[in-house]
Image 1 (cartoon, chains in turn purple, green):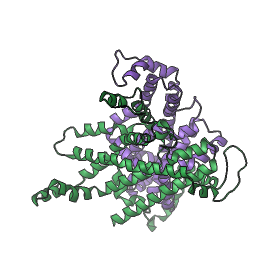
Image 2 (cartoon, one colour):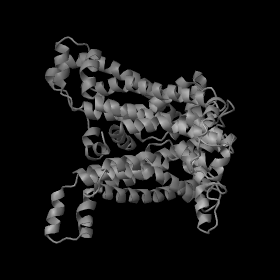
Image 3 (spheres, rainbow over the protein chains, first blue to last red):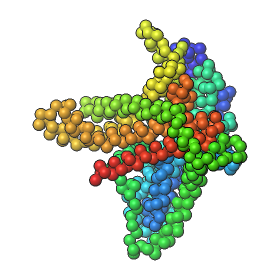
Length: 241
Length: 313
């Protein structure tokens, strides 16, 4: 909220009145409104997709007693251990061939694939405590599997689902490597990557950079302040990957 | 839910429950539906994780440059070259320095956790909440903010040094200061996690042990060594192992703060892979480095899981 000159003279002093035009500059000229939109789409898209595919999968693997549930679960678990570096190189060429490079959908798919193992791991930990009789009872009452999943199982594991939402949102919002490789044009860049490029191009304009940095930090900070306990739980669970 | 789940419940990675026979007919129905429920997750996971890993392994046996359609199979040449690559081992050494440096953050986390679990402390949750903020922040944001702090002319660090009558330093441009400066920044984001994990461990220790020890005349240091440390042994193991696993993959701060420089003074393995594959177009060689990094991480993880299984017995 300050001018560049003042920032460079004394970076931590308050300047009054606050100079909101840095935010306006950051917003309009530095493409930050576009970056913010992209970050929002990618983060929310990833959260929704991870939940949509990982919750049914975790349910099937922990409650439905599939014959192959153990090997399938272990195969997913493998994903917790592998660094992103073992996938990005061929993925770049793969996404290019699929026409998904520099699209938000491409980034959502990659981040979802990275997020699925942990979501399944976390959800299974609470799903495996559910009595199988509950599912049977629902079936006898005539509920279909998806109906059972949504109306009976979902409310029972909602703390775990919340943890997945919070953790995945933060991971995706803060993600650098995936957008660095797969979102390389200005119309699809997310905030962290936009900031990185902004830092490289206009190193002198520290106040606009600070405004952009604040924009990038704020959403996660708000979630953290509001959902503090779930956030710390989710993150400590998340870091064990 | 918490790291304790991961620590103390090997059940989470044990085989699923066996199906009792009287469920068999229904299981077949559940089976068909069940596999349909797994399919979407499996498809995305296979297409964007498993298949690319296989591709990386394949590329690591070629000399592909990422541009030309031609690539030839060169077997283990990339790996042989990697064995003699000083830049690779230099980067790996920086990763190890980073691991060792991060133990300072674990130590700080332990001190803070001990303070927060002391009975006289008030507003424990507030302190924990505030102290944990850096751990929630994007490394891009953290890196940019600390770049400003380390600025030679305008940064607050040199400002403070000069105010105290000392000379400022080019923190991120100095051959010997850049790595510690980046690690210090990383530690700022690490200590909060260690604090929360260790706090959980400290709070799970039975209070009556301390009372019994005081009755027996044990001093506070002796109590710390004989009750506190064994009580949080699992958490300490977890933090040490995670310091290896996470630090070996580290990339963001180096990319934002130094680009591996000056020279290669702050280059870590992940940054080297990045520059091989996407800057100098040695895709095959970069893939080989990525495979080696993955193997190192896998070996450390497996050793940790084994150790934990043994300590659970």
